[in-house]
Length: 88
Image (tube, rainbow, N blue to C red; front, top):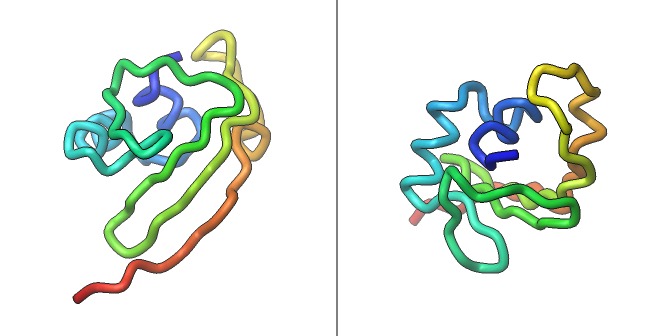
């Protein structure tokens, strides 16, 4: 599943277009490198998501096989850390 679609399905982003904008701006990383919206999500990936006021690190636990199938959002990822960003 594409990363922009996964972010929407898992509720890490409110809309797919917002997820795409964040990805295009380089605010979502895996292993220290910015990802593209077309990145294929895999179980075990650790993502760093930089929101405006906080950084969230999550581990992908499951990827829905079909985009339309309802799955509990909490089962898709585990939050590793959630920290507020310090503005200078």
